[in-house]
Image 1 (tube, helix red, strand yellow):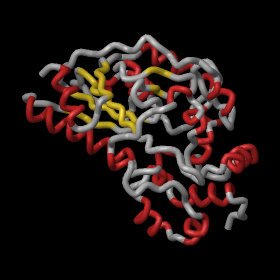
Image 2 (cartoon, one colour; image 1 turned 90 degrees about the horizontal axis):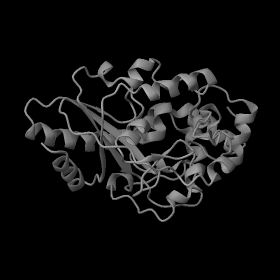
Image 3 (cartoon, rainbow, N blue to C red; image 1 turned 45 degrees about the vertical axis):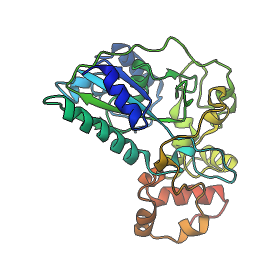
Image 4 (cartoon, rainbow, N blue to C red; image 1 turned 90 degrees about the vertical axis):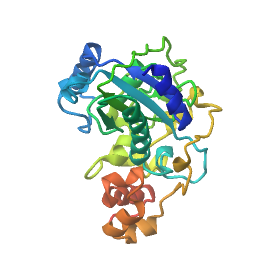
Length: 301
């Protein structure tokens, strides 16, 4: 099967940002990761074994190519939100996996002995690096992947397969380097050299376990976010005039704001039942409760 046939099928099911990454090992990425470790720019949420992050064959021994897809999720700007845009619709882990499975079903029907592994923000490889390698996007100073079609409001998913599609080439471009993301980042996490200290990122702070430090609480209160942060994306010129996503599941039954009284009163079981299919639910109710009380300047119970 030719790569063009694969991409045509992807477009037919609403995925038009598709590229093929080679299987490495990615030695240039290994150097970057090691430098980040030395600088302390890690959160503990990353895959701990470097070899697993830079060598796909550690995860799938017979991998020959990696299909990388971007899934746009922008549904508009809304007032009075305390959730990040990526949390408005159905959990992207669920949606992306379902759409990647459709691709794999198609390939299984058309390629003999097709083998694959699907990942949606849960794999060992560095998703954004794969997106760069596959040519579907380029890095912004804020470390986000930017696509020409949808800006940086995209989720990235990938399929490791035992079928060798011809690799695409990275785009020879960068963001316009306006510096707005550096200037407006509430935690000064973006360092201006395509590096960031993730532990100062508001999005990370909203997901951090345990008690927050005084400075972290201050950042949370000033920005009124209960989960995630969009500031570096909202002010990015590459995100101006981008289209609304065509993926219906990101638009249906959207939630923009969590209510403090409900979060304080709801049981853990009820929280899981009501919000279990939302991206903000993975950390559990207690983290959300901590954040919403800080943001609302209510005393913690």
